[in-house]
Image (tube, rainbow, N blue to C red):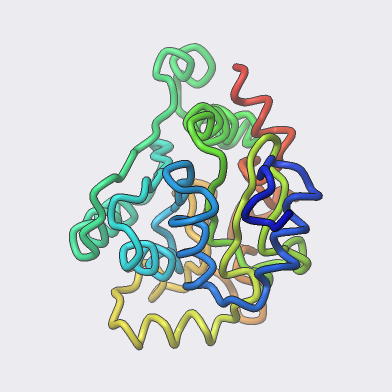
Length: 245
């Protein structure tokens, strides 16, 4: 039985099998295969509309402009990110942007002063990102991320496909370098996020994002000084727990 004939459940065996078979395809062909053949109608791109996001958004737009694009609006985002989102969607002709927001009643109970990012950043991320995304992903068998190995030591072994609870997660840019990203932006004349010019190389929520200093990795400006490296959406056990909240 071939990979295309086998059931694609979200387990590590399936993810490894996919990575082994398709590792040499390249990001654009890999995306086309996933969107048009492997997970037809059952896959979404999750995008932060951050520093490198235009690359994947552009690739997806060339394949199918109606591919669902899930965007987490935590209500703590930079205004530049929201403006950049709108500009990119318009320029690329994406027709299925789905904006996910936290539950306002839940926020009013747990974070009435909008200051949980300081007192309990893990819970803040859970309410504003993990729970909304977990609920949205219940509608899909696979999702696409823009993570790359060069971004941080914690991502150095990032595979192309990985298990994510009952789903498969695809990281088509896993092996790309910063030079690859730059070359793609230049080739297609893609606009940069306005904060990149201020050395914000990984852009999340405004209170928890700072510029990157010379010699630091791309994600060092996230949750600076807190020993926190991920919001939780890329931790399967956390994400699946969020779906039940």
